Image 1 (cartoon, rainbow, N blue to C red):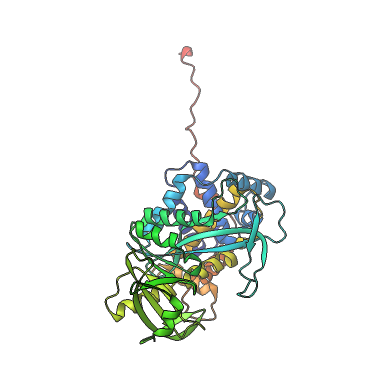
Image 2 (image 1 turned 120 degrees about the horizontal axis):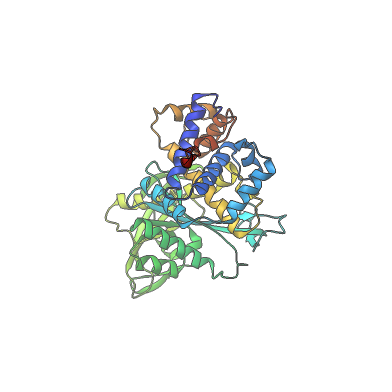
Length: 417
């Protein structure tokens, strides 16, 4: 297998075992393909098929390897594979997890031949004053937090308004909610201002799920049988509960307050949690979680501020694996590749959950050569460490699959006896 260090062998074994769990009860060709993709992306920190082919070190021509990978991506992701993945995720997430739902964009400004490519708002260049639109796709993601507070995806879908069967962005969001509820039964959904819509609130209430959603200044609620804007409620109250929160990589002294309101006159009572001192205007968080004490208010605020995890998740997908640099063109292949990147992100989460005494994790962190010893988000560091370890490998993972051959049967001429 040409593993020049023990840690290279151990790293390969972790990837192969992870791939075996994902491909349980699937045909052998699918198992080999998924293992090749997982290993190739982790060994190259790239989603380009040419970079993946380089790490597999196959005896065939590189062109043939790329064609084989492309043909398999075109077949799509089997339902069984997706179920195995969700089962794996469920094991590393708590019983009633926090689920963050958000959208991001994949920008392909020079792309011309990608299937169903539409126009998307480029989040990296847009601002509150100006929106910049480019060619690309939208991605709707639902991420649950693991027991060590790292995000793993439970739903990820690339979509475009150019698709024939496309309904709306809300339909994709409802699908993300339904899939999350199907997996966890009970969860707390945390969303930003883009999801401030009655349809979202009533959907979650109908499913008996808890939520924390940041409101826009245009939102009106019912207070003492009278409609009032949430911004007016903010001006009437003051934050009395002081906590320290982290927002946009900075620590702030925040002041909290809460008030009981209704969305409609005939709807259930919910709570409006007001957060002062973090942004120019107070943050307004609507939740149906019960508030009985000061600790409950603090917990709701902290749950909302944990949503920076999904933003880091999007950023790490793009920076670690070059999510926006893919070259496959069909929608089926793009979605298949997105699933493979999502699986590799979950592998990073699994590695982050290893014991601090694990020799492999210690070696990964050492090879990463970090500038800071303590960080809150380990994906970049673990991905770099894995890349360094696998750089010593001179062969891929095909040698880990034993080829079953029929036993040699000697030809017998019974009529000669």
